[in-house]
Amino acid sequence: MISSRSFRLLGARLRVASFSRSQDFYSGVLGLEAVPGEAGQLLLRVPGEEFPLLTLVERPGIPPAPAGAPGLFHLALLVPDRPALARILRRLAEKRWPIEGLSDHGVSEAIYLSDPDSNGLEIYADRPRADWPAHGSKIEMYTKRLDVSDLLSTDPTASADGLPRGTRLGHVHVRVTNLNKAEPFYTGSLGLEVTVRDYPGALFFAADGYHHHVGANTWGVQPEANADQAAGLEAVSAAVPGLAAPRTLVDPDGIRFELSPA
Figure 1 (cartoon, rainbow, N blue to C red):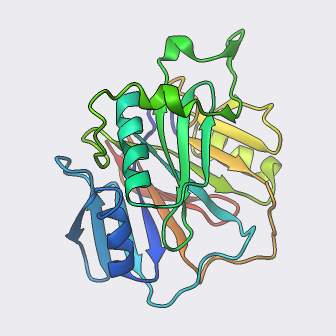
Figure 2 (figure 1 turned 60 degrees about the vertical axis):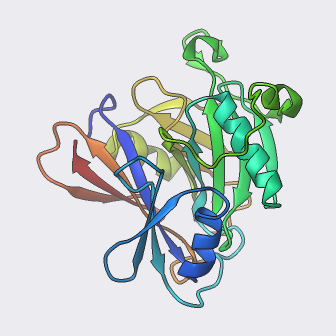
């Protein structure tokens, strides 16, 4: 078991069908830098940052994951503040990239979209922790319509920049076949704490009092659907202070967490 006060997400590895198509999106739309990695890999990093935010693995011609398949629901990229979120919203509009949702979760404000392989993405900004809704000592999350006008008013320059320095992988949200089986893995093996239990069909897990580093849901799950030979999440990487050596943990639905000493 890993200490729940020592978990830090680093990045994620995704299977995609085409590097060139993916680079058009991740670099051309989101503004990430593309750097060649090992054979068959493309590293995507925020300008000015050294560690790759995402690693793409090319599997030419692979299809999107089947609807409802266990695996990736979305990767969530955390920007430093609301003005940065406003700028990326403007950029998505300028680039005419489809936006699938705009939500206020109380703890955060979020934009939802998908990459060219239908891998789900969230780009979000946290509210200050002192402003997070809570019931007693428990964090509360909800989904309301995002006040887009108020968000855009936070950026008086009206710029439309890409993802800025300081952007990081804030959380990963996965679709699972059974929450009762997922919970012991995320709390026991991975050492996270349940932060939100009353969101219908979902559980949220975190370290250090965060609202969630991992979300797990059963929304529309099709247990028989298999995403192993499709685009999707190959692994999540995280740093764990005090870990003696790298190790890999796999949840009941095959989702890999590659842990390294911090």
